Length: 108
Length: 460
Image 1 (tube, each protein chain N blue to C red):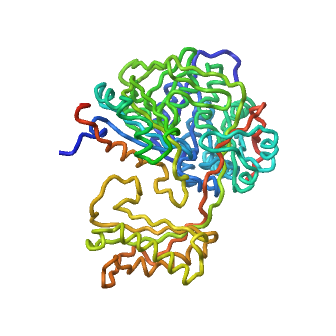
Image 2 (image 1 turned 30 degrees about the horizontal axis):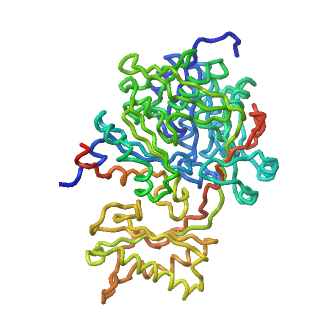
Image 3 (image 1 turned 60 degrees about the vertical axis):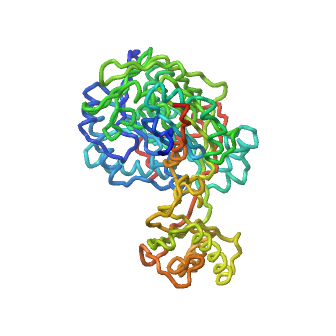
């Protein structure tokens, strides 16, 4: 059996441009229990995102919004929008590595 | 324009973008609900730097004409203004004139005689250099200090206006305002602010309505109506089968924003930390507690794009499981072979052109962030070449063409043939652009970077 992932706890995981220079991602958790896991700073934090997306840890911003059961993450776009190396103009598919993040069994 | 204070202002937003289309019945419904103004965004930077760099629109004239006809006929009958922001996708002067030309045709066909204001937002590098030298230009993260050469390298630069130029146009008697680049929110905020509504609820409502139906339970449905008053605002969908809920409305504050609690406008910052979202019934949401902190310094954000080169693309596909068993090794060999052949045939060094080889079906979207592995069933191979001129970009793609057709995988002792998607295989994409400005200019006068033309004096 594959591990439980963040996507399994979420109603939706999405990513999008926030202007030409930033990527932003949101995890909409299904319930408060899922939110408790996703919002746990020892599980999901700036360092984890920096490793997952190969960006500088100090540039990552994580926002936790309990009233919506949402964790939101923003970081500067590593590849300039529209450049030769940009394969995702709207950064709309960048959520996948985050969505696939395994949730430890003892967290469940 | 009456001078009587009003208790509330109703803003109708039919869609997130002019030219996207909607059911005209939803506009009629918004008018019947008492809309005081129709506001709609005509563009953004969302789709990339091409539109600003080339001063062309993402939408078609036919779709824009259809939408303007729907707006103008309804607004003229109701006697309310129409405000369009970021005309022509990027809000260049050409974009404003393009929408103005379509608007004039629509009005002529419909027998309407509405007073049109055009607000031009394009900036020239020489004027901006004066601001730069005077220390009035500041970078926004993640960009650094601006250099004068960067300004000079841009094909087009626009400033994102706040609500003030739009208000000035309305006060001058405009019934239709066609604005160049404006903040997405200023388009919806202008009229309620002019009518004395408080800044907190107004800017928050403007952010929620900017994408039309996206703050509802069915983002495919038509637009929304926001009613702003002294204490907050309510929001409801124009499609009676769709709902706004506290979650759908609050969640929209997260969309395309770096920070979900704050949003900077030219004259200050919207702060929604203490906003409360309450369902008034199963379709309408009330929002209270939104604040606006006026900034010490008024700033206008700049957007600029420049040419990075010219691109040529070619596309072939692989279905052979022998190659796909280790397609990364094949792609690596392809990269080496392209460089070698281009050097041999065109005499170009690696630094004189660039290319990206993308394996669609394998890792094209996420590249080295791709978490999956294992042989794919089929792979589309896109070669995208960038060079200082179109002829060179195409020459590189043509040199790569036999390899795109026949390159054997490492260790393979026969010649495979791949599936080209088109003939000729090369597609010339023209100029490629990048955004290079993410800076603000300190302005003492909100109108100083913008030019308003009212009435018949068309520049088109």
